Amino acid sequence: MPGPSEADRLIFKNVKIFDGVSEQIVQGDVLIEDDRITGVSSSPIGDAPGQRTTVVNGEGRVLMPGLSDAHVHLVGNANTFMDFITGTEGHLAINGLAEAKRMLLRGFTTVRDMAGDTASIKAAIDRGAFPGPRIYPSQAAISQSSGHGDFSFVYETPTALGGTQSRAESVGFMRVADGPERVLAAVREQLKKGASQIKLMVGGGAASTYDPLYTVQFTEEEIRAAVSAAEDYGTYVATHVYNVTGIRRAVQAGVKSIEHGHFADEETVAMLAERDVWLSMQPFGLGDHHYPDPDRAGKDRQICEAVPTIYELASKHGVKLAWGTDLLLEPQGAHRQSEMTARLGDYFSNIDALRMLTSQNARLFRLAGERDTYRAAPLGVITEGAWADVLLVDGNPAEDLSLLTDPEKNLLVIVKGGLVHKNAVVEASEKV
Image (cartoon, rainbow, N blue to C red; front, side):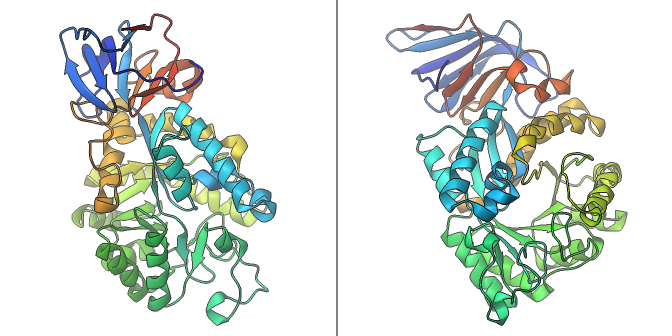
């Protein structure tokens, strides 16, 4: 179909249903009316006289919930470093909007954006003006001076000492704040701009220049200030951090989600389980990111090598795991979002991987509380009353997870909010 199509009713007949939760994949029909799933039945669901009905014969293919990604940078992934340097804010946003459509056509119907000005993109998508996934925006990620989100040049004066904003701040990608008062202001600024959760940088990273991976960023008092401001708005703080000290400081201060956490030791992983803190992980591999200098390339290598151990420890202790990609500044590599889905099969059963990609990520998103603009219906599941976000897969991803790595070929039908954004099933018919 050339564009999104809409009927009063949409029926998937003769499909194998992975509901996002259950071990069993069952045969049946699924009925969608408007933007919700209204029927899941092992018996055939019939037409309704007088109502427009689109019927898709699945012929035994798998129908599953739309995929989700708990750590994207929509604007950051759609633009190069030079785009950020030379492009206008409109240029950055338009590229982000185009990438939103491509994400949807890769089967990602919901994403959590962890740094970048995406509130306007979300608004345009939510009102139906453009195709794209549901977005949980963080707006600008908040960093200390010399931290993971400080992209000013070394010769520039920090804003806390009277300097001007860096380019990353002026386009709403980062916000540098030092001291509890400035952190409070920065958090409240992002909430004012539409953030559903807050992103705080509390440790070193690979992409940044001034902070080795061992560095610990923000004092506990500063982190507590961010947590307090977020909680006053009914939401939570997620923190970028790899090292043990930073993870433990963040948890002690009350954060609800650790982004990355690759260098956590067993005692720290056990603490995450005890404190009911999420670990939002990315199965990074060499080649996902490319860095122009040996220092950052070396940091990237350390992170990639840590992936198997942290997944093993998290599984052992029953930590609540989310899945994300964290691709950045390489638009030509955006397709790796699909490739990274299959890597979960290296560490988990296919069913557990599919749960993480659908209903489990959705549980993390729900921590946004009243800031969650999609809270009216369940996400990441195929059940009566849920949002009608579904994929028809040519094959069974519970048996072969790699099917998700080629969405153009294997995702035959993509539906979000009841709108059909792709339909490659020739047998589909519309009735009145």
